[in-house]
Image 1: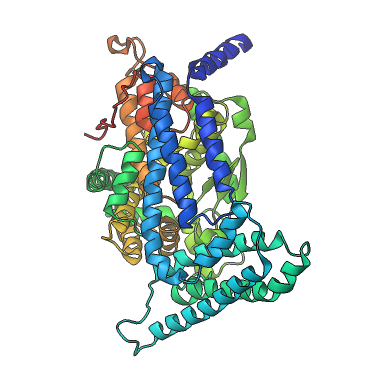
Image 2: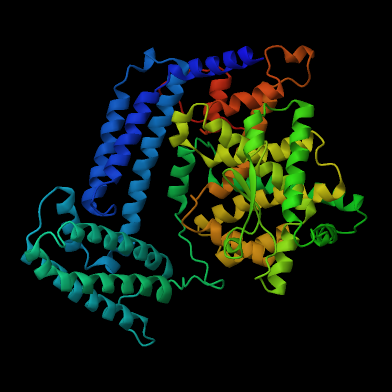
Length: 574
């Protein structure tokens, strides 16, 4: 057994040995080194330098003798080429957004010059630096005065006014500037007496003023005070940027087409929900969902439920021989609880390597908060959430990604990462793991939730839905508790996730499910099984390709040798 496992491992390593792993590693190193510059990342000089690096790499990649590349290297070539173009598109978007925040940063250019001098190893002139700092203090004071005048009820039409989104973005940009100035100042402070004599007072005043200005933009204008009732503020990127993002993810559909796909899936879920409700003896789906939510785990019992559900799923996978589960992967998953503060943005169980992070009522919550947390994480929901987060979902996926094609980690896409876990929700349904009506309602709730994520997140970025409308949709159409829906939307539109992340669950799951139907045998010994993969082989091979766009995995599993002018064209959803 040991020798056969070793052979499989060696074959996997060999399969990727001809890829462009060294070239990809060099590209990553170049990006990291440039990002470590002392210059501010949003300065025009630094952005121009990053663009130059990317275009130089584009030319280098184009200069490779593509015809001599084997199929694995060709996949790597397309991954790297697409990633470079994605970064160029993101730079263009950042520059567009910077034009919106420029009026709020009118004082900053001379300060950017100081940090740029440090990046170029040019030593500062003490008196000239002090003059720059002093002028920045005066300019910032004048800018604050203009902003206050613009907020007055009787402000003239031409007054400086600012909305929440650019204010929040500018607050982050100011914090970066403040940190880079700290690095600049610390090079001289205490080491060059003349520099300290000229600059200390002005530097301390400016640092204080920058901090106050950032807080003013974040708290007073954007309303982000770190409180539960903070307004929901996001940054819609628009149709053009969505189109570029879909191209980078190798999804040959438009945003409107993806919304239509989500609506079709939503209709299927609603029909199945009616069947499950009838099995429960309920006259409406709302009644069935309420019944599931009311089947509460007693206080103190939620961790035990997660452990039990994880063990149940692993046993089922082994019995059905659906995927390889390395003993160490099974041994090393753990469990932790999400605190009250964390549950403001994470109201349901999530994976935090190597733990499943479980959400539930906490003694510091008030009565209503406890009840909503318990209802949102009841038995019927945990049955499918647990395997999604652990095995065969994110825990197994992460375990394998650290061992196979790890050099492709820079191409990680939520369409594979979240799509893999969502595919398993579908596959476990098809395999009969979702057995009771209560489990079906719980699983369908989550599948409807994935459909809703596509609809609300894309419509938000297209400017067709407000955050409050997103919350209402999750409550009215899916059946969320309002606190949970609010936390979900706060996360969707926040800075931690890309604009397509929420759409990636269902769309990625549909991609993998379509690929499974195409490449696997319906049953062993069937005439149609010739040349097809077993379910276990199929799932194992996906895990050996790295977290890359799914159409690239499909090309690898089919043994395709992609042409240089290849473009995404797989219409996996019809």
